[in-house]
Image (cartoon, rainbow, N blue to C red):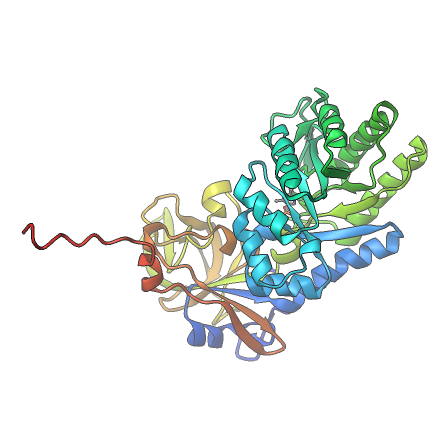
Length: 440
Ligand SMILES: *Cc1c(COP(=O)(O)O)cnc(C)c1O
């Protein structure tokens, strides 16, 4: 297993993160447990900002908080000076409770409800990324009622979809998100925005995918976006002040993944924007990006206790842990791959290949297939790395499992930032109807 950030093997032969022995963390907090290497999150925030400073462009980095959201995470992001993307009333509520400055919050999503929009207007958030005609009309109406002006970006779909090493041109993009450029929906949306008295159109937004390693997808998307903006400038006399190119920067889940550095990604984005603007004599817009996974993914490690094993001779050995698709649904949902180690004896001469199963009543509840580990014993602590993004944020209570605690570690100190759910939490919203005793 690759050791990210401050992860290392200590003198006891145990996995240590943020100066804390994970075996001790398990004694203190139990399993399953999400551990976050706080310094690594901070370092990623700084790398994106430093990379932009080198380009000399005006920029804004917003953390796409759907990757991992809780009050302490929002406070960390605030301290690092990033902006914050939210996609629901729940994320917005958490951000407000965290005291995150509203003017640095951006609101995304393809079906924001009137209630959510009102909540965001009341909080006076910085910007709405408007996704569709319905929202454009609704936002104008609600802003007018309040007699306020609202800054917006329009989400457009450039017809480029990027994942890992490949990107595809999809022509007229078949996506639930955004205004399509090719069919000119995007032009109409700009026209309507400019005519909406309570909306101020700052620019456009696009997000082309996730876990992207090669900047070529971004490069292609940006050239389409700049061509579109240039056309719109001539047709509608609108010049974008902001170009938001979304998130999706890839991380290293397993040894097969070789992401290029944050600096290289930002450098490529910056070069193509400068080139396009120069060619088209277009004033350089401010560049916004929205990394989620690349801020928190590598910083997260999940710790489990190993219980049952099942050996099917000459077929496979299943090793079960006390969590699974409830705390990490990505393997079941996307076939995502992870690496693991035994945290309480990392190094070993003798190894075996096993498959890690979750404890849910689903055959598909497998965390890792064919994983090489030291000989496994019951009670061992399994550490799965790189679970910081879309782990806790997608966690659920299937089989009425309790969501694990989340612990931040840094400089030898550990602090719980989300408590483990209790059994009482599980029945909190259950309504019990007591039979009327007089009828009995
Ligand atoms: C999910 C999402 C992101 C973040 O994607 P990552 O792969 O986590 O970096 C950014 N912007 C938008 C609009 C998104 O939907």
